[in-house]
Amino acid sequence: MMISAETISTFEEFGSLQPINNFLKGQNRTHAHLDWRTPLEWLSKPPSSILHSGIRIDGLLSLAPDPPHLHWVRFFSLRQESNYSHVWKRLFSSIMDNNPFTKDDLIVALCYQNWMETLLQANGWQKTQKVIVLLWRSTLPNKQEKDESILIRKMKLDDLSQVIQIDNLSFSSFWKFSPITITLAFEQSAYATVAELEGRVVGFQISTADLYKAHLTRLAVLPEYRDRGIGARLVRNMLWHFSVPWMRQITVNTQHDNQASIHLYQRAGFEYQGESFPIFQYPVE
Image (cartoon, rainbow, N blue to C red; front, side, top):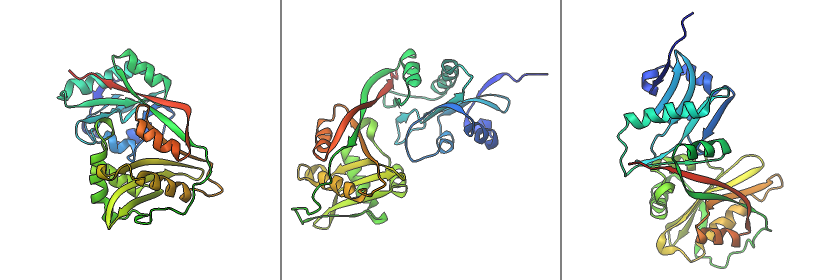
């Protein structure tokens, strides 16, 4: 019986969805960047690579940029029995060899699992930052707000252009979101609100939730309106929204060195419980 040789293909070159879907349903070793797109959506966007023998898939990797030049390791998956170092080297080398990366490109990974951290360290990636998880451990804030000039209301589709502008002014580097990502975050949110002052949207928050857990995903205020308690108002309103008997946990993530953000969340009753995830960056030459 002839055994097909191990081959690297792009998503377009591979050309068959069924083997990919079958692979994704399997019990694989997987790293997935948490966002609002499916693995298949990321894999269909270059650069991505597929390691396979015939139609038997052995590994998948996506470094699709969003926004331009920001390449998170979106998805990396391989069979449980495979050598993850070998599969990674084949897939990553193929992407690097066939795509014209420049110093404008950031190639980064947020590691949720020890094996992924070990893999990247062994392959020349550098730890650049850490994301910490804060857990809400307090009593509900007073529902009566002092400043009645600030209106907190549910986000509408018509707000998105202003929300995108606020987001773009508020985040840089690793944390930039594209307009389509902001739109997807809004569409898939459990609770999204804006802060309005004199008819102008000056801040927003977007949160996700399942039955028992809620997570504050995005919070931003226009630079010229900061230090006026607007971010805190948005957080308090979110806490009130999720104050239902079945909600067991409310969390938020932030960078370990973002003292302003940490201070805001701590004042709202969030505590750091020791959980954190490192960010690694690949040095593009």
